Length: 283
Image (tube, rainbow, N blue to C red; front, top):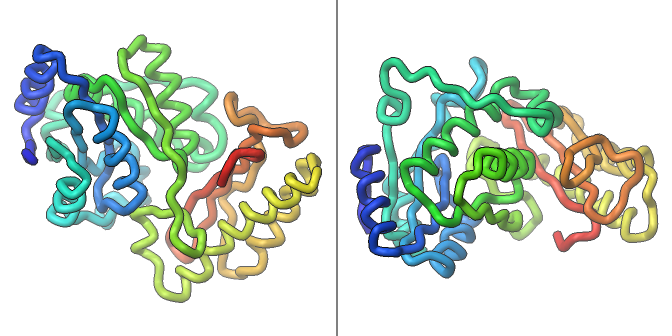
């Protein structure tokens, strides 16, 4: 496995692989890898001739009061996991490599970015779009893998890729959960032992809505009330958003149906956690 820090070196390596007719599979991450990331890497290993992982904590997608400086980092551990999953290249650039002096280009996005995390984190998805577009230009992937835990991010990247005619197949991969149901996230490392237990209210909310829907309930109000009740069992939990939306357009759902998205963001202490599920799909 090769570790590359330089943008030009990575781009030249990718272009060399393309000239050889190699299919490049790509998993972009911010590092501090867990089993969720490993599931993306293993799928990428199956579907590409060369598997590239990027590790870059992207400053442009963090707000001024967010956790950029304390975001967990462990390059050595990440490389060990990547190698175990069959990764060929780890691309881990510095911020000055990705955003050199004079950088000024932005990507303007549309309605998909306005609700949910877009409303809570202004400018977040613009930062995501810029860095993903840059990574696609550097790594030259044929296929790229993203986790469905960041459902809105996946929707935005699909839209951007289609709108800009980028020749990359975008694959959304299922949420990977801990044994007790908590969605795996690098930010889970922030949680104390007590907060880790409190965080299970997100999963209980997801289950409550799925179970009601499976019994035939389609009222948005009643389904959301069930989710609020589960979150409310943890007084320390603060809801950022808890909504039912169309699973494609992200417009508010008037009535729940197969494919409706339940999306929630909840603060446990100072840690903001997200989860989601598509009603009628496997969990």
